[in-house]
Image 1 (spheres, one colour):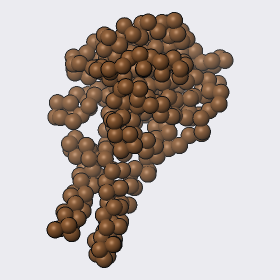
Image 2 (image 1 turned 120 degrees about the horizontal axis):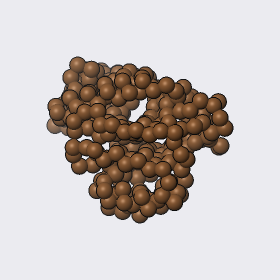
Image 3 (image 1 turned 135 degrees about the vertical axis):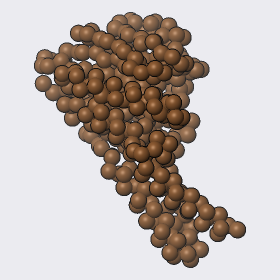
Image 4 (image 1 turned 90 degrees about the horizontal axis):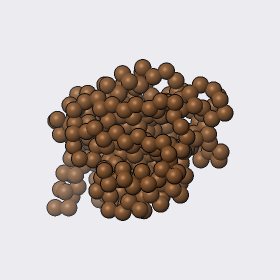
Length: 308
């Protein structure tokens, strides 16, 4: 019976791994791509299990499956320099979760991190009141709350003034996007910071609206003249078709793409990585995970040297 379960598990993993490669054709198949690291671990366990039970061919097949699953994952990994000691700017991106049960803990974390710019998602009216109280530290704030569902608000907070700031909701039932133009510290060409929260695509309607949002976001990013840092909850892991479509539409590149999970925070390292920074014209950037502090997402922080 135990051996039969092992064979069924191996067959199921083979099917899931195959479906993950069909994400560009079927939105629902791409959901499996988010769990490629988990598939690799499960396949490795089965490979050792079959080897222990002297099922050599089954063990080799599972080992090959580990490789097939990991190839797209490893291909997307990018690593920057270690934490930059004196960055020009630090940007913290965090989905605070609209049902966050302990906002004071999140505020304490943000004050302690002392980032120059905050990109925040799901900033409910309750959260916006909390953030307004942080105006002593972040006097420049924009809360984009034109949305069609609970938890789709996006906020941008900054210590330094921006030259200009705009927000727009590109498609029905998708979170708005904020983009702000900042002067470069020390002089040079100005640069943009873009705050995003990509819509979830776990149901047909969500997948359709997600595609519309990404296409419109791509048009926006390509129209902006200058270097760009875009961050936020992208609801996509690096090896998924959705993530690749974001990079293709915007012509931005991933930065410090690793295996560290950011959601759900409750699962720790067993979650998936869906919060990211993407850039254009900026290469010197390092990203670290800060912690959840009561949210279901882990906050991420980018230390960036902009150059001149």
